[in-house]
Amino acid sequence: MRSFLGKRAIASGVSLLGLIVLVFFLSRLTGDPTNLYLPLDASTEAREQFREMHGFNDPLIVQFGRYVADLAQLNFGQSLRQARPAMEVVIEAFGWTLCLAAVTMTIVTVSAIVIGSLAAFRVGGIFDRMATFFSLVGASAPDFWLAIVAIVIFAVNLHWLPTSGTGSVAHWILPVSVLFIRPFGLILQVVRGSMINVLSSAYVKTARAKGVRSRSIIFVHGLRNAMLPVITVIGDQAASILNGAVVVETVFGFPGIGKLMIDSILLRDFTVVLAVIMVSALAIFIMNLLIDLAYAMLDPRIRY
Amino acid sequence: MTDARILTEETPKRSGAFSRWLSMLWADKFAFFAAIFLLIVLLCAILGPYFLGDAANKMNLRGRNAAPFHLRHGIMYVLGADALGRPLLARVIVAAQNTILVAAAAVCASALLGSALGLVAGYSRRSAAQWIMRLGDVIMSFPSLLLAVIVLYMLEPSVANIVLVLAITRIPIYLRTSRAETLEIRERMFVQAAKVMGASNTRIIFRHILPVMLPTLVTIATLDFAFVMLAESSLSFLGLGIQAPEITWGLMVSQGRPYLTNAWWLSFWPGLAIILTTLSLNLLSNWMRIALDPTQRWRLEMGGRKNG
Image 1 (cartoon, chains in turn green, blue):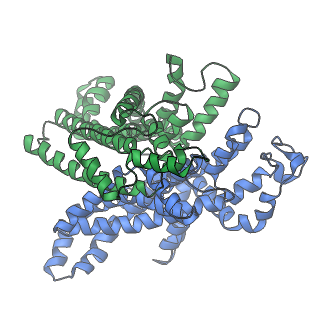
Image 2: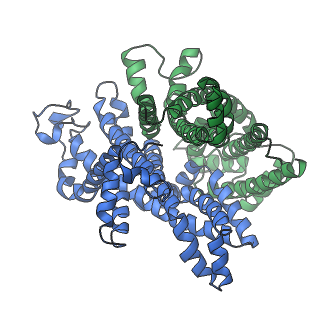
């Protein structure tokens, strides 16, 4: 187990290092932030002073050396946009996204597993066809479109829910429902496919022959064995929300990591971009570990 | 796009293959209508700009935000008009070209490059394989938004550059799939036999490994086509993709956003076009997963109940 963990950490660390180098140098290619932060009529001296203050005048390689030296002391730099430590800004936004991902994925997982297993129990039946078709429709809809259509219907016309922001439970309903749709469709398909395979296996037939109730066949005999591929997909989907549901967060004005990311990229807040990348890489690393642990728990044959 | 490729790919193999595939397509009604819809979209994409290019850009200020389902301004205005009075029906049809072109080019490029790299990574045991996989990890975790901004800033915002961004971000999918498949196939008996008989590496890869994993790759590519379309739409929606005056469906949705409360049709129709196209691709890829799998194909050839 320990050597497995070490190997994993090294591989991820190498990738993260490469990523940081790449992002550091490539993001500087997108232009000088000075013109974005100072007014148009700022004097040349003021511009020069701004660059001097934030160290944009030094050669790139010197800037990178300074960044790495700071990083070694766990100093992630200052946010240009908010004049606060970059890590503080990122952690704050990450908390919001983590909540959003947790709430959405819990609802998605429970409903996809229940509906998917029921659909697999009677393949080709009415319920199965409906579930398959609607999950496909859901998986095909672009989330920005769903988001704005939902805002028009529920916020603007019906006045049931707020259009954007955070604060009360009502603020969460629209973002969660829009985020819900695509992962739900995908996971439902995987649950269904995997359950169909498991339900046609010998031990399920035995259980049926013994007269075990169908509910416990589905949820006890079937589900546990059908869960392995499902967990992989759940992990992928959770990772994509953790990486920032950029569009949904932007449309609903949700102060999560996706919105932070796009704002920082557009305003050339390089330190925040790098901090976001590191935090989400760490989160995804931890999540992948949890998924591997879940594999081992579900299937005792898997050892690390 | 994709269905046309499948059909032309299969026809020369043996006579009657075309009608065999057609009847297998007919066996799954959803897939059949999906294929027909995709053909129509493809036709719009190819012919639309030639016939409707002018109509799509003709402003008619008296018809600003004209409501849909009226023939007052002519047949082109049946879906309404946008904020400059340009007919939405014509615009949706013309925008199909860029949307389909970008997605097709990105999918082809990433599929070719990704599966070639995956084959190498799976087939060779040297350290190159490790490097390719690490490269895949880096690409996978590189924020695609940042990539889009970098490309937009460094190069001109053009259709080709969006294709570049999307193609790069999708490489890991093919890389991982083809590597995993190669690792599995290379251990099979027929590959071992070919090796023992002294076949060269190129021959083993192209004659023995590639044909076995092609169905998987084609299915993934179809599914990915839908994904890339959505990704391009999201990028255009965020203002990082195709730039006006070029149009795509995603850009049209975003252009309609300010008028959402009083003219919902501006965003609704292009969004619907995206949904229907993606849905058709998903349905078709479901069908392909069965049709290209020799052990499952009987479900379609028998007709009748075939789900699962």
